[in-house]
Length: 293
Image 1 (tube, helix red, strand yellow):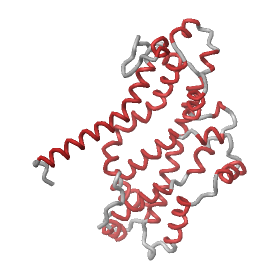
Image 2: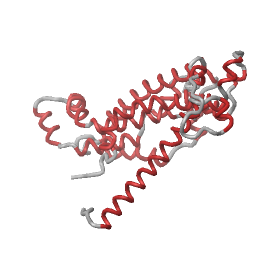
Image 3: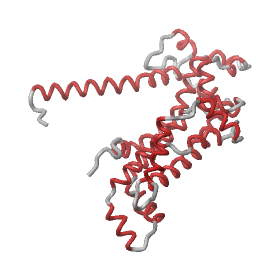
């Protein structure tokens, strides 16, 4: 396309303005939360904190990092992410590889594919979902947060389309050399599918880390809450840990607003640290399966 004309330059300038504006809309709320968390309780209570800390202090973070409830909920979330992502990715890769085969190779492939795809559009509802988990004996356990969503069908569809786009000659030559399906999957398909794997992995990590509703419903005790479920109760309600504090100096230096901001920023920090390492794959993975030969 020719962008040297006046209309082309105007179009380019409009795109830059639009994208920068959208970027600022995403970043500025996080910057405000960060500024609030580093500000004094007086400045936060007066509502004068915007995009820069006023009366800079670390006290809110010191208070939060000494809270056993916050640290315990973060530990549960880390366990959920590590175990949940491992289970999701293993089942996604295995199922995506199997469903990427043609019907002459995998008998009944179409029926299995429709069985899984229908679950995207039809579900049993909230009450049957809860009753199944309850009857399985998973309530109030880490398994309740992982096993009900062990097979993310949308990710399976993305990955199987990516697998089908790979050259069939690679698989055929591997079969001629005596390789089986397992070796082809782990030695050929996965190394060639790093953009897809990284993108789906990022979706899975974010999904597990940000999930809060299932923790509230399936955990009978607050000490079993993952981090986002715990933060939901903290943001909606007043932080009782601050009210029960006997440190008068700490009470004068922090407030409910600064504590909520500090906990929110700490809750988002792990994802913010992971994303830069997967960003180079993420852009490629956004068009998974969209182009066919």
